[in-house]
Image (tube, rainbow over all chains, first blue to last red; front, top):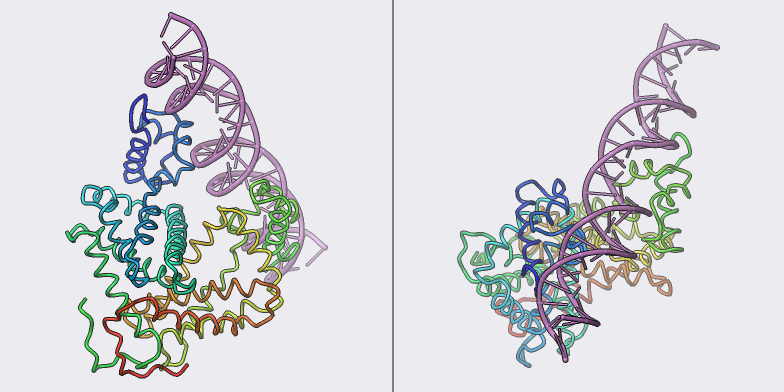
Length: 205
Length: 205
DNA sequence: CACGGTGATGAGACCGAGTCTCATAAACTG
DNA sequence: CAGTTTATGAGACTCGGTCTCATCACCGTG
């Protein structure tokens, strides 16, 4: 693939992450990023659709998640299939060597609304993909959407915890834990006791 | 408030919606919008943060939803409180006279990724606000987030149905219906409920 | 009725994001 | 080695968005 200096996209992403962390997102120009990567401004836009996308380019997330959900065991319940998808992410995407990068990336994104906006869009898109994948397993549409929303909630919690460097657990384990907590929290959402019942045990937090 | 020609913001929004519908979002410049509204480009940016925001300016949504959730009956379950919030939206925001505008706005947004991105961000922000409002009722954090996610799913379904002009039901009624469907779909999502107590009575719905 | 204050607007310079076109040089093909 | 392909560089160009300064309408007060 790469002919001249290899990994142009990777170099651009690294340069962007460094500059955004050093000087902030909007005091960094695309020209700055390109030059630190040893490239021209126009080359930047050949690799990324826009300035924001340089932090969201690797979109293996979507594919891995979808295929893992589709190929989950036939008898698995919707949320089980979603759990298999999160397992796959832990295996193929959110691996230990990738973790430091992800943590820095996360901090940069949280520091600028433009990047948060892009992340919001990616999240919506990912949720829709998950819902379609679950529906393709024969699950009714609405149930598939519910499973996808709960799965995304668990994913966000997992991502947040995994980005905490004091937590050394594997992504997949955190995900299973988070999904269990979400699942356990669901019944308390509709009806039943009006206020927190003193007689019910608190969950294992 | 308005001194010269009144309703500058409204005129800008109307002009933008017309032009976006006529010629598309990215073939319409901010200058075009301002001129159709009888204003200058710089005035546009005094009324709206950026070009996208002209379709998202009226953000009464957030406030209404939050206050309605907070002031819901003390004994109401989390999803009940969310339902009260949706009722309030039907009362104060998504009213019949506002409907035609909303439908056109929705079509324009769905036609351009930049606008979808902004809407995604608004959705995430709204979900977070709902979760905080529910949590302020004394609901544990995770349960509040689950309620907010399910509520947002119901809201999106409601908004979609309400934007179908062949559906003449009131927003609040559609919302109650959608919430009921979401709630009914939830149990089918997990196969083997770890904590769902079979001996406990279902709530009054 | 004149006068000054306030606030919304207009005009236009300015910067950077993003597009587009053309030229160039490296890599593959044979 | 000749011809093609492909990633890149260079730079002009439009438009979004910021900023500054001038202007004009309204309002109050004396």
